[in-house]
Amino acid sequence: MSTEAAALALQDHAVLWSMGEIRAADVVTSACNALVAGLDSPALRTLAACTRAEADYDVPDLLPPALGELGLTFYAVGSLAGQEAAARALAARMLAGELTPRELVFRIHQRFGHELPLAERLANLDDEYDIIEYGDRTPAQVDADVLAEAMRLTQRPGVAPESTDPPHRSGTAWCVRDGHSPGSCCPRLPTEGLITP
Image (tube, rainbow, N blue to C red; front, side, top):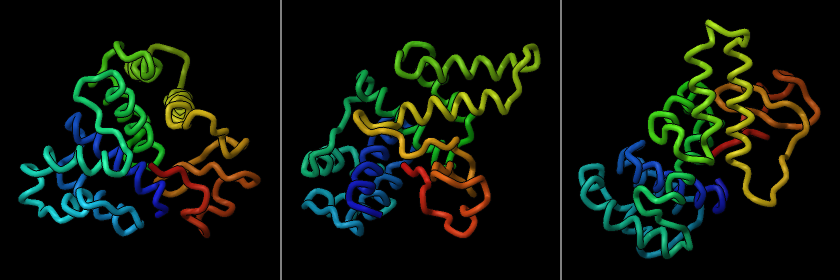
């Protein structure tokens, strides 16, 4: 894992923890992964040294300075920026194969309703799953819309998509490599070209 990927993962874990989506021990694991990837700061080392038993008590105090020393943001619980970061982190989890499209939209809708403009389309797609048996759309069509919206949410500003080919499942993640068909190279190269959080 690159240092940039480790920093993004730590940032995502921080925001997911702050909204109750993951456990404090998962944040400690992410801090350990960040150290292994080459990120380093005194507060990060202290955070990574927490035991599972200590995590619930120590992460609230140790996480903000660890993020700050790395130039990352600790979002205030309930802030608009924090909610948007959480929506992006959940979308990244779906693209990494940790959530299904249906689970993503359910969690977005459950957490934010239709009140978060950035994730409004995902909340609407949750409604579409609920009425799918009464309409002319298939679950696969709604899944494709969820995938497209998740990819939009996780695009960093100013970064063009890496591929012009439609994404497809490869194992547990979504593959966006150019110039191949699903299954042609992904089984041989399971991590190349995969979107990960």
